[in-house]
Length: 93
Ligand SMILES: [Zn+2]
Image 1: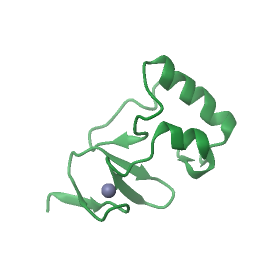
Image 2: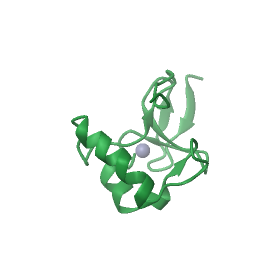
Image 3: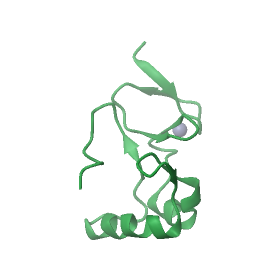
């Protein structure tokens, strides 16, 4: 009952509170291990859906996000879009 979703990548149940990647468009979830990286986002931004924009990313919309991630000390190998059931401030600024 503590589980709310199952990873589409490896089939592993994802526990409540565990960071996971949510595919908003298809309503699927990926565990941290199977989540795409920023490099994947850069390579194929069209695979990523933005609920904020209500459309898929393009190289143009992806670039500033990637630049900001790198500027903040992130790496291209970092997992992207991990969320937990704790509200985040991702929509701020
Ligand atoms: Zn997985």
